[in-house]
Length: 541
Image 1: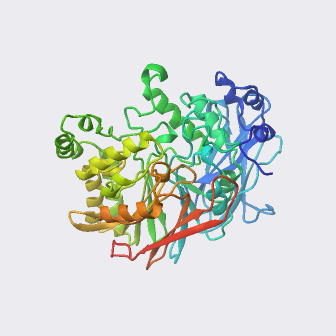
Image 2: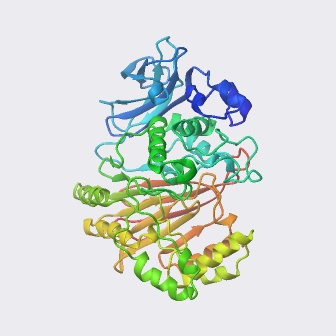
Image 3: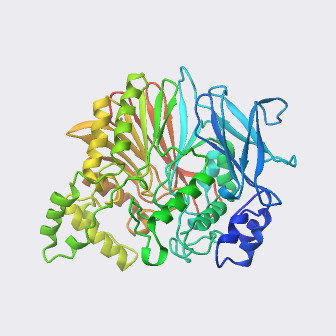
């Protein structure tokens, strides 16, 4: 069955479940969906190991209360023979979502799985691959970030779901967006039929549950989850824009209550609706080839980013920006990860290298490469006066060596240095894969004048990028960016899609795949770009 986020389709599948009843002011369609029962959102998998998988589903019984589900695994989709299984209890306390880890599985093997309800009804069949053990010559992961439903179709998910050469999917955050419809994107920019529920900003637990239910109704996202195990981590919009441990840009305590309460609600809904463990950060060993590190650079320990507003409004902005750069920007106390996670990652990098694994892949919600706005930006055309004002502020900051996005690692230079030094001290073949910026970038990362690793930063699935701000030829923008930033090797500031990262013992390849459109259902690839790095080089070839 084909499913879109049109209200008629939502009504047809009945995706919202009983949690919708807790959301005030819902329209009649959403309230009607609250009576949905059965397996409402197909299946998903995550947290892969060589011998285990975490499996997910959602099942709403006809009568409210606890329900026990069985899970079955098989080597074939017909389930002629069951190879493993288990049981799990769910209920309204977790929005009827269910997760179970199944162990003692064969490594590097595609396992088919399904859930069975007490009445004998079965979920759709999913497929997930365990991680390899021993020697492996090739491993490929699709990498996604920033999938705002209102901006268009999740063609990137659909394209990846149809491939037969992927071992895994990685989602770097902004899996969904918290905004009220019409905020970002505006109603004029919103693609027809792609308005999410609820029709308000997600603030409460019921709001976040309903927003996930709406996103997870998308046919292309369901297909991705049915086809591939996903390593997922959150970023700011999974809670609120520009979130940090003590608040967020898009959170007003005077009208939206305590940030701690809202953050807890966002995290609870994330753990309910996503195929993830309760561990805030974790490593995944790809046989003797690599270690993938899932991190939190957003909700648990990130310091509030500094603001340039006061410096830009000063009587002498140049002097004020220099003072900001030398005193505030360089403050070593500000952190992205917190000391606990920093310490864990430093030791885990060393452990991975000592074990002989060739590559160390750090998944980051934010871009690590250094980027300043180039001097040519003062002449770029923009779409709105607010964009022109932002671009000029960014250009003024760039003249003093300050980054144009203080919300990225470059806005936390001491923390960035600690991360890169830990990779150098471990003698790691570091590859940072990152999202959040909505654009595509490749960097040679350096610390203390020495190569520290490379970064492959991915474009968004749908969210608008630099092209929404700058109405100048994207090729001209990219060329100026590369000239102005020594670490930057290449960038694309205008197209949507996903990355495919392929690891081998002798090379790591990354391919940026750009879809022709997100405004309509179209899985055609318009263009691509490829970069590679060899072990020991720590520079893009």
